[in-house]
Length: 237
Image 1 (cartoon, rainbow, N blue to C red):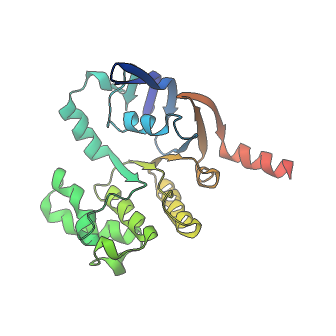
Image 2 (cartoon, one colour):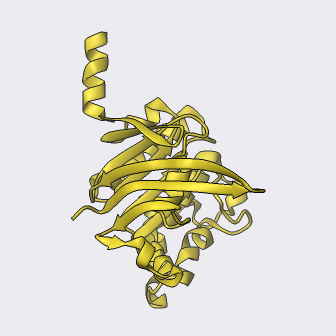
């Protein structure tokens, strides 16, 4: 049984009676423990696909199964429960509380979890340590660099110990050095068993994945294995 399986997944938005198809019959399978990058230009449907896979939106047509369960049959309450237990999200804009400390920002998801309160401090400390920010534990987010803010966002995504991490353009607001550090953290998390689904338009970022799905105009244009890509590049050189 695959972790994620979609069949002709589609999403159409309505705006003042005008229909816009953002995703068109996307069929994809992602296994537990994979590191998959979804690439494409602006407007290709990358973020729409993430929103559907992460239970942040509902499909218009098609089928989505997560761990074998057909999501269209689940209530919003059940989807929220699965999302909280199974998924962590990292976004380009960080989405931190600017005047809250690193510790307070990372702790936040635990308030909405089923984790016993007695375990909150330990889990928060462990997540902060995982991104090497223990020395910034009590700093307010507003005083952190961009790279540090993104590491806090990753720690927050990790604190409930979800098996799946969705990263939507996580290096988009960072310089190349900070971006490389963030990708190394995501790669390490994948090596530790996390499933990583990365949304990006950057080739160097996508190369950290084991498989790249290319989207164009809301549809899958092609897929490729990263090792095959690297081999091809060496051959060309």
